[in-house]
Image (cartoon, rainbow, N blue to C red):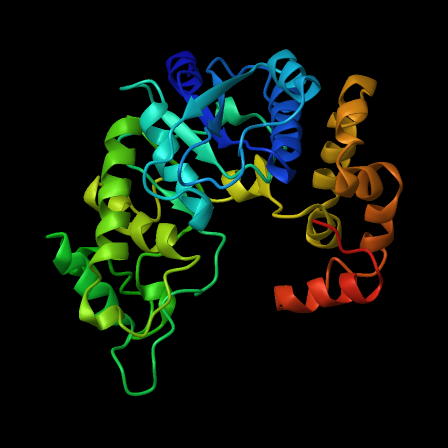
Length: 334
C-alpha cells in the first residue's frame, strides 16, 4: 500500500488561469487543493496565456494580489504561447498549455471551474492508460436526418488518423446511441507525459479544424473541437472509458461545477460546505470579493438563496431549466 500511495503522489496538476473569471476560479481551485489534499506532493501549475497576435486584449492574470495569493496557496504560474487558438477558441488553451509542462512527468489536467473535495493523492491514476471525464451528455455530433449517423461520423475520424474504430465502441450500448461511441467531457484528463499527450491533442485538433472528413460537413466544431479530438487522443494512447474506479473524479474527490450559481443549485451538501470552508479565510476572501460573482454568491448569501429554489433530490433533468430558474429569480452571475 505504501508503494501505491507514493506512486500516486508523483504527479503534477494543471489548470488554466487568465484575467477575469478564470483567475478567481484558479484561486478557489488552489485553496481547495491545499485544504483537501494535504498529502499531494506534486506541483500545481496555473497555465497563463501570454499576449500575442491571437489575443486582441492582454489575457494575463490581473492584479499582484491575485498572483501573490496563488503563490501562497502553492501554485506556480506557467506562461505559455498561443500559436494556434487564442481568443477565437479559448478552449484551445488546455491543448497548447500542455506543451509547456515538464516533460515525462505525469500530469492531471482540470478545468479551472473545479473544486477539490477530497484527497486527490488517493486517486489510483494509471498514467499509462489515459481517461477523461464521463460526466457529459451527447453534445456532439448532432446527426442530420438524412446525413451520416453517429457511427459514420466517428468512424471517419478514426480512419483519418489510422485508429481502430471497432475497439473504441461500447457494445453494451445500442447502435446510433451516443454512449456507444467514445466521448468525454474535457473537464479533466491525465497521462504519463504532457508533451506527448499535448502534441497529439494539438495535431488531431488542428487536422479536424482545418481538414475535417466530409462526414463532418453539417457538424459544428465550436465549442466542441477539444471534445471531438480528445477521445481520439485517449484511444490512440491506449486509454479508454474505464481506467479509473467510478465515483472519485466528478464524485467524492472533485466537482466540476462550471459556474457558482450552478454549484449551489445542484451539487451535494459536502461540495457547498467545502467551497464555503476553503474561501472563508480573510486573505482569500479579500481577493475573491473583487470578483462580483464570488462576492455576491458566496459571501452575500445569494448562493444559499439559489439552493433554496431547488429540491436537490428532484432537480430538473435539463441543465437549461436550472439556469432559467436561477435567471428568472435574479440570481444568475458568471
